[in-house]
Image 1 (spheres, helix red, strand yellow):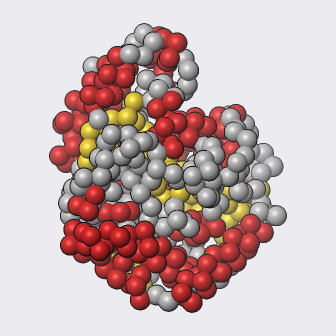
Image 2 (tube, one colour; image 1 turned 45 degrees about the horizontal axis):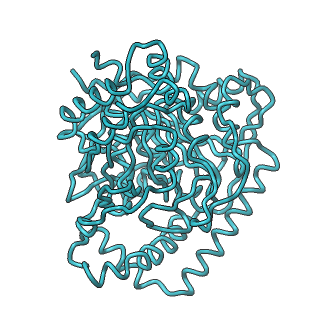
Length: 468
């Protein structure tokens, strides 16, 4: 079977199934062979569930395959998601023996839709970091240049798709951990509105900021999968009970008259000039399609990183307090250092940070009185070399993890839906991406605009040459 099939989007694979050109069992076999070839380099997977996927695929009927847009399609999930009877490591030695008793909500939804889980993907330990570096399971590399980082913390989910090991994956996003690695690897990444996809069945990092996220090759695939995993679960206190939507209805709609906000502060500062030039081309194209660009000013962004960490670290400490007492020596030094910082923060600091977050939510929501969605770069830098610690731009030094997520973290605090996608290739041969942010629960507008951009050849990028 041709390796080119491994890089097809889900809708194309479904069309092949319906025409008799491929079966779910053949897909599982093909991806299993590719995993055996590429996992040593990509470090994408921690645990494989190929036998279970093959057994499930063999039992699917033609009627089963017609049940959902992902029936019979393999996928992977970040190793924070529980899969019944499978090990959940969270990328750490601490959970070397944690077998899940039931599926996470999103995994259960995809199981019910007859999707085929091929395994659990690698990550920065306990999702604490944006580089994806992992001293236990290895560091995922970028499919476009294996000397560079895939980004994190959902590094394995991005690498698995980019290396052609699955066509879609679940991840989590607390500060950009889906959106940044997705776009650094030339993929679509979505952080839905907070509460739209329940987080029940996930190993928590920060309850206030954690989101379930999706990675796919195309906007249509992302819309289809969101329609399957969105829902309400009372086990997740943040879950919102709203009617289900057909997100794919937004695809193909024109964008004439849409008001797209362009930030005049923060989001276009200290960035690679090639990224900014790519965004200028996107802006010009959107105007040509009838959209109206509206300048907007975000609230004071000076303390946003501090506010985010002041909430993250105490909540992570709370989530891990029992494990620290019982298995403290098994934590990696990176995450243990973060938990130590969490011990130094006072309740006063945490409460103030939460109040800042509420103010950010109100101020950002007010921006949507004047615009329908917001456009920013996805990241200020392309994927950096493995081992990079500091990124310097315009004379300012910045920790690499902060640089990777500088434009994404804010929207975890506000909870607005945000989507990243590629919009060009850097002269160094690496993907460049944009970010679209919408009103609460208006993922349809993100898909509507993103699909218009995706259809224009000027913003498409070649596949990585991982099989050469």
